[in-house]
Image 1: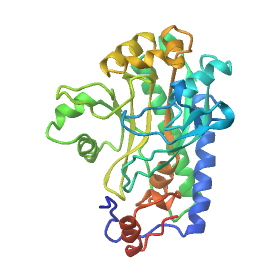
Image 2 (image 1 turned 90 degrees about the vertical axis):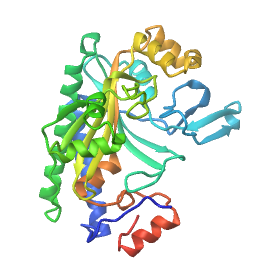
Image 3 (image 1 turned 180 degrees about the vertical axis):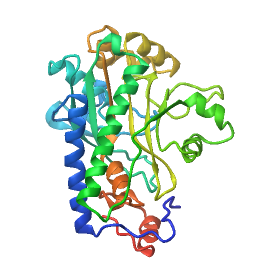
Length: 337
């Protein structure tokens, strides 16, 4: 059964042609704002990696990567990336980046096990970014400073979009409220994690950075899944912005300061993933051969969806949808790309 819903009275704000123009504007404008805000350089990135490299992002641990054999490469198995969280860190070392600068890239992925709804598709497009930091910058203050810079880049793009397309009226909040997942659970112990996010934001916190995702809370459950081998669970989070069209919290970015030797060692044990210590990437990290970094992914279709004020992600990206979703959108006059 489809989880898609179209708000009563909703009309797509732009025709298909103008929507394509707006998407082009957002993507071009935002990546320029982002690279200036964080001092990043664009690099090329893989669509797939070797299965035995340990470089693919395991997300929550149950998602199956799309895999295929490659006869011309000694019959090895390739897997389509879920994200580039680990690959970027290795690239920073290989490309000789130094503290204070970093990279960004277009990341395209297939997440075959994604539950599709208004916000989720099996096709994922992100700006993946990563930068080298010093050990002294592995702290909450530096994390918050970076979050504010990203939010500023998002809001600058949204303001420019309204000037270019006067028929669009979305305004985003620049002031960021910071709260941990434990503080959120303490406020709303009887709600689900996603319900807590919306309840908190409905109280007037229109832009939120939700911190410390991955570890178990007092309830014995984590707020959300996070792989143990890229973010430090004490120094990460999600950027959430309020979506007026859907009347809910809306995640635009997952990010954080990456694990160092100590936090990787601890989190692999906590997650029961000690076998990953044998992967080449993890061996390099545990032996201190990789730079200290921070990074994240910022959803391209998510930002386009939020800034244009559309109700379904299929209005700003091309994907495959189930019959119920297609029927619901057609009956509401919503054209999916």
